Length: 197
Figure 1 (cartoon, rainbow, N blue to C red):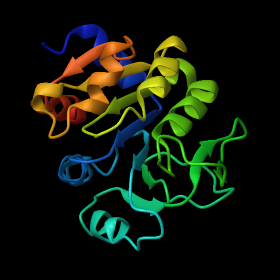
Figure 2: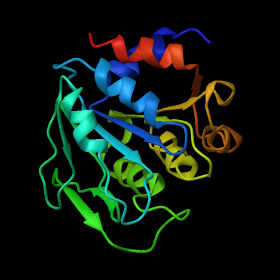
Figure 3: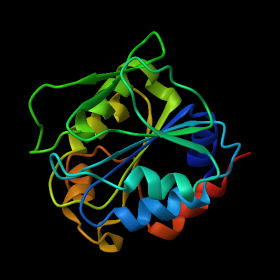
Figure 4: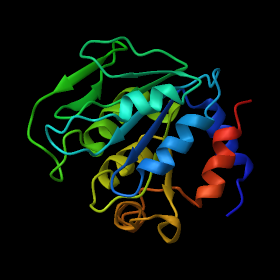
């Protein structure tokens, strides 16, 4: 579908952009991080599944290729604009109304910690219609319920077109419960990322 005026307007109004993905989303997220401009005027929060207790080079690789400041979330860290945050392994990442992150050690959701659902639901409570979220490729249903809560709170919610995703289950699960207001191809997602006016 074409990017209509409604999606562009709400995209521009969003203060925070959530990117959630699992299997098959790494290359796509890497391209997104490389493309985002230095003055994006949003906070970007990436939640990507990774193996428990598995040391990851994701942050280093992303940071070396990002024009924006990029860092792994720390507990009680203030949330800043023009910064990309990556949810750390073995914790759930939440945002607090006071404007900072908190890390939670409760049980895994959909076998995942960090859980996309947990972060998305947390952002829905704080940012409401000032949030935008894109759910990408993945092999389970994590993120679908969180995306639905975001949509119900007035946020702009987008799922990657399952036909375009390396693993279709995650975006398809969101579409099945009507959590995604828009279903966009990879090409359309990148067109939206370029819209920084």
